[in-house]
Length: 232
Image (cartoon, rainbow, N blue to C red):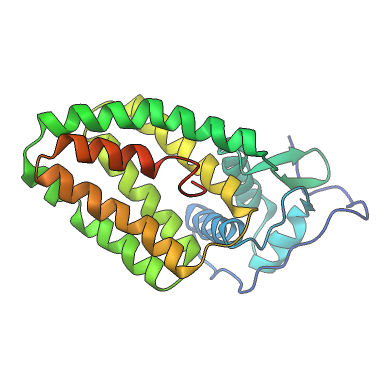
């Protein structure tokens, strides 16, 4: 499917990033830069849910061909962040409160039991190895960096799930978290204090796991993925 080659209708908005991504000689590098810029724009709320954005404008802004832009958008479509609109561009996905609740429910069903099993199977030293990831999240939250925290949050959860040795579980839970993050992007912006509170739950979870306080660890894990606690 070819996107970004046809003349754009009036309602498709040509989004211009705050800063252009640096040029790179390799297509993979360019695609990665464009993808990173789009992720940040989504989490920061620069891309409005329901709006259609023009692919050619992105390609022109980054000084690249339409191919890396299309590839980045297709990856985001696979993550549920955007929807492909043939011959027009990409629509930012909209989600309801029910969507958020369902995402949280499925994440709870998958992540919490996995963490409970890991808590009894792994020695404290393995959990200590995740401290730098938790610290990275706290640092991003302290800066009020929503996009940076989203990436740190994703990295932390992926690291925890990868300890199960189940690649499918790690892939599925990572995809669910991305979808929840994109859902949150269209809502109210979290204040720095709220980001810090969320990030601190990673640290608290590690504390409980290292202390082998299994009941406490389960409670923290369950609350952390609850839609009632925070938007992801």
